[in-house]
Structures are given as structure tokens and as C-alpha cells.
Amino acid sequence: MRANRAAFDRYALVPRMLRDTTTRNWSTTILGTAMPAPLLLAPIGVLSILHADGELAVARACAELGVPMVLSTAASHTIEEVAAASGAGPRWFQLYWPTDDAVTASVLARARAAGYTALVVTLDTWTLGWRPLDLDGAYLPFLRGVGTAIPFSDPAFRAGLTRSPEDDLGAAVGRWVPMFTGTALRWEQLDLLREHWDGPILLKGLLHVDDVAAALEASVDGIIVSNHGGRQVDRAVGALTVLPGIVAAVDGRAAVLFDSGVRTGADAALALGLGADAVLLGRPYAYGLALGGQDGVRHVVRSVLAELDLTLALAGYADLAELRGAPSPTVVHP
Ligand SMILES: Cc1cc2nc3c(=O)[nH]c(=O)nc-3n(C[C@H](O)[C@H](O)[C@H](O)COP(=O)(O)O)c2cc1C
Image (cartoon, rainbow, N blue to C red; front, side):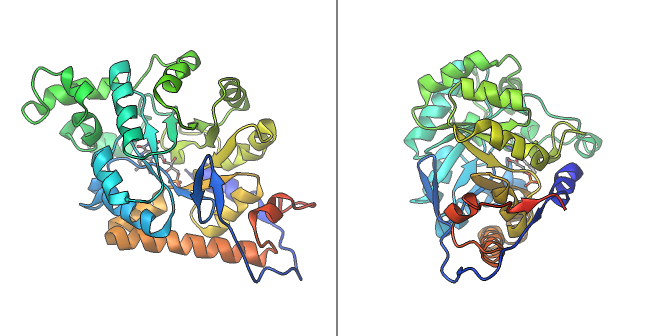
């Protein structure tokens, strides 16, 4: 997590002067999803531990602002409940890929039917990293049936149980926890997702340029450069450090999104200046949720959007095309 922040300190914006940026437009379309600025909310699981409304509050705040949310498989509300809260708001679905293909197919069909337009497949969490604070507290919410709303409401998952999760929590947890840590998954199996998902697919958690090459080989539509906010491999590289090399390697053949360490609109501006097509905000909106529910999320996102707008405008850019087409470096190593 510190490496993510340190990576931001290794780059700096180089503002330009005497350019007309009085009228700005940051709207963009990423893989078919229109958004007011290249900003999405990252999938964060188990949000009910922060606020009773959890993912519903996030969905409502996002819908108000037109900012896409990415719903986690580890949500505390169902796919359909979050879709209802999101209404006409843009929404993507994040998959923790179950080892049972029937469950995978069922979850994907539900997400499609409920209006989630892109699929984010998280690859860096096939088992949980070493998390001392959680270990010290013997804390894993899934074991208490928290953050399991999606599988527990899934007909294919329930079909594999002799007693329902409502009647036998232990058995349901015992079936789900090993199932959603898909240790046997390999690149070849991405075809299975294509069979069951006809929209865009992004792979989340890529850091190595050879994995990016494999992703392009597999014809994915987008990648998310991310180290999971530093929660998985301790001593992993700060995600921003590898972003420029990955942008160069992809060379426009897939969308390149970025997360891990974005705290402010200026951070988002830096990642965009380094070539990300869009950035995802993680912990900051979760803090907003904890403090103020829907209003808290809305306030955080509006603040980040406002700072992003001001930063890019004061740096001399009026829209993303200008930023992308900048003839001399927008960002330098200080
Ligand atoms: C508490 C917590 C839970 C998370 N849960 C998920 C999840 O369910 N699925 C997922 O793909 N990423 C998950 N992430 C990772 C985020 O999507 C994102 O990569 C990360 O938070 C970005 O870093 P940042 O928090 O520094 O912005 C989680 C992150 C946090 C902090």
C-alpha cells in the first residue's frame, strides 16, 4: 500500500499556461459505458460492515452522478438488489471466478439480466494474502455469512447444498469459501467466460507486462493495472510504477484502466497523464460510505471529480483528447 503512494511521488504533472480551458469536457466512453469523467468506483466487497446500506448506498450515489460502479462478487446485497438501487445508473460486475462452472454461468447470467454491462475478472485474489490485522482478530466475514449475498441467492449454488444457507450457514460457507478461491484457473479457461458473457471483459490485477501480453493474446477488451490496493502480495510493485510500460505494451489494443493508491483528483490526473484510459477509486469512497452512507460516497466522488477537473484545467487541458495528444510530456519524473 505504501509502494502505491510512493509510486505517485515519483511522477509529477507539468502544467501548461495561456491555453483556453474555460470550457471543459471530461466525458468519455469506456468499453461502451458512457461516464462524465474517466473515473469508476472499484469493486470493494462486504460493504455492509461499513454501513447498513452497503452496496445499495454506493449504487444510489453512483447513479446520481452517472459514475459507474463495479459490484463485487463478495457483496452483502444481491446482484438484483444493487441493480434496483442503481436504476438507470451505469454498472459493471466483478467476478471472483467460482471453480464450479454451473455457478459461474448462473452468476454471469444474473449479472447480464440485471443490466451490468462489462465483466471485471479479478485474478490476484485466488486466495487471500497474509493480512496480520485480520489474522490477529480471526476475522473473515464470509465465515459468518457476511459478504455472501450473491452465492447464497444463486440457484445453481443453492442446488449444490442439501440444506439452504438459511438453515445451515456452516455448510453453505463451507461450500462457498473454497469455491470462490479458484486456484485451478488458467489462461486457457478464459474461453469459458466468453461462452457465458457476451459483453466486454476486463482482467483486473495485472502488473507484469508478460501477463498483459497473455491478456492481449486472449483478446480481452481491457485490463486493470492494480495490486489490489496492496492487500494481496506484500512487497508487490506499486501499481503506478508499471503503468507507463503497460500502456506502451498495449498500444491501444485494449482499454487500460488503473487503480491502487488514488486518493485525490490530482492522483487521478497523474494516472491519466501516464496513459490510463480511466482510473478506479477504492478506499476513499469506502471511507465516505462509513462516515455518511450514500451522502458520504457522493461527497467523496464529487470532490475527486471537482479536483480532477480543476487540476487538468490548471495544467492546461480542456478535454481528454488534448491530454492524450499532448506533444510534449504531461508528466515527468521530478
Ligand atoms: C476492503 C477492500 C475490499 C476489497 N474487495 C475487493 C473485491 O471484492 N473485489 C476486487 O476485485 N477488489 C477488491 N478490492 C480491491 C479494490 O478493487 C481496488 O483494487 C483497491 O481498493 C484500489 O486501491 P485503493 O484502495 O488504494 O484505491 C478491495 C479493496 C479493499 C480496500
